[in-house]
Every structure is written in C-alpha cells, then in structure tokens.
Length: 68
Image 1: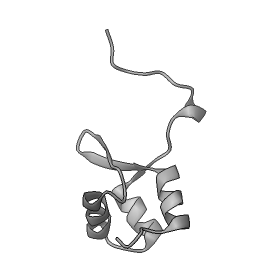
Image 2: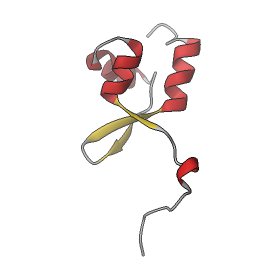
Image 3: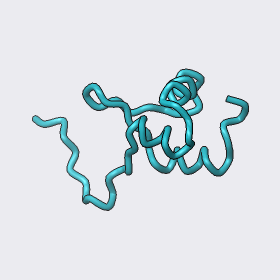
Image 4: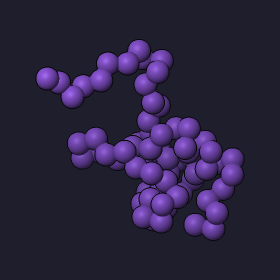
C-alpha cells in the first residue's frame, strides 16, 4: 500500500521554499525561521527541505504578521 496521494496537478498545493518566502518579504531566511517558531507561518517538511503554502504567504502579505 502506498502513502502517495495522486491529485490533479491544478489541485496540488502551491509550495514555496523558505528562500523564496524570504525573497518575497525581502528579509532573511532567519526571519522566516523565527516566524515559523512563533507560529506565524506553518512549515511543510519534505525530506530535508522546508516549504510554505503560497496561499498562507499571500495571506501574511495582505494582513501582516500580527507583531511578529
């Protein structure tokens, strides 16, 4: 039995690398890690890489970090 979930390509969550999120906010990856520790962003770990959902990043861009 496989743990893989097959979804149509357009239904897959759009994921951004930690570096891409930092570039989006024009900050360091350290800041993104701090936000993650504070619960501002929820990470998705795949192997050794850390990703963030694009929708969550866009929401954060629009509404801010609530003091993070």
